[in-house]
Image (tube, rainbow, N blue to C red):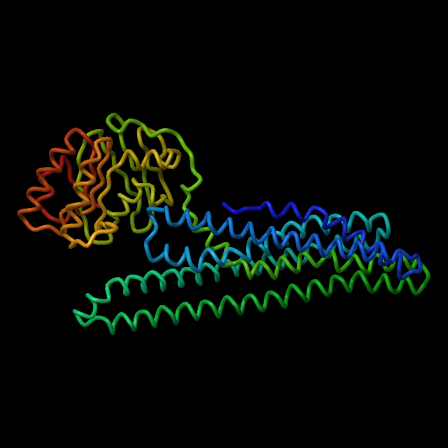
Length: 449
């Protein structure tokens, strides 16, 4: 999903770092080479400029891929999609442009520097080897706290964006029933929560930056002070001492930069974690649903705990239970929109996670609680009837998933719909979330969730 081609431009960087330090030490110790030094410095600037140009193009390609992934994800709510494709994808830019390159440099530059210093001054090289791990260790300790804070900040933003979109879409109904002011209060509370989480995340970022800078400065000092004392005592040539003094900060610079970019890119990493798992998934061909048994094997997710169910081919079952018990979650599991925290969903003995997602969705017919037809200026009942008609017309579907299919219909229309549902689902597997008693007469078995 993330375009990493711009990282190839960083290949010359460790060689240019070593060359610049060698030539600078040589020039200051009376060895000349000023023209070559200027050439290396200019080349280093040029390489970095080329990398930045490539990095921004890679970031744009990554943003385009993410927009497509989020917009094509059928399991993501509209409010979350709106937040992800606007603010979310732009937050990925610091990750691609800043954090990824520094990750690479934080590995290759210290390795190159320590290797060179091992031949110039083994004592300085060993000192750097001993102090170098301090920055990653402190960074990892702070980073664990940063991930938690950033995840909470992003969750607060997604909730705020989603709720605000829902309020805007339903503002006419809210005003008609006098609930607009109450929703204004809710939006203000969500905004305050997001502000609190953002300030907490920034506080951690500032404190961690101070810690990393302090550790890096002390590490450089531990190298520079002994080198200076040995130079004064005549135990170290001037060129070698200058080389160590120039290379020591270069060793810790990528690690310090990676630490700084870690916080700048934290929001982007949280967005990448939201990328639908099925966007790059290619699995096995779905089993024939006319013969495949569907098994929920001790599944736990959200409010659904230790749920087990076996559905025979061609069986029609109704899921009943109180609101929030997990009936719609069962349908989400079958659709693949929800992944189980524990247990498995087996289709003909094959784990649903191993089945090709696109082919699986093509073998299903689904009607959600609140169908959305675009464009369609229809009432709730009319949208429900159109959605049911489209679902029942899918002749290739071997599994029907109907979430309260008659919720918005009057008694007469409900009777017609039930008759059509009975006819079209005959011989095919159907899972129906039912609240109305009339639906229970149309199934082979009732399962309480």
